[in-house]
Length: 88
Image (cartoon, rainbow, N blue to C red):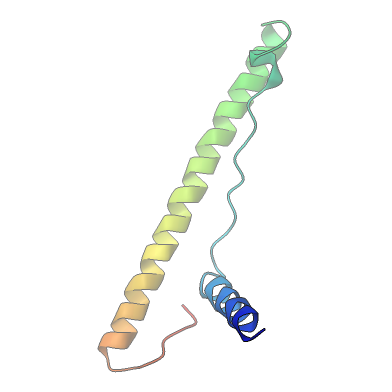
């Protein structure tokens, strides 16, 4: 039971450490690429999909930048002699 409590505490700490980082949901490929007619409607769905993929990649990059900044801030905090640094 103690191990389960420790795991939950670790998850809460890990989650709160990255509270500013958002979830990037990957868009779904349009069904028309696998089924149905390749027509103007399918073309518009593919174009929308490509825009959503670009947004998804931007989201991932932004999250990576935030994670990088959190690590830098924690490093700077620790290097200053603090034993516990959070809230970044």
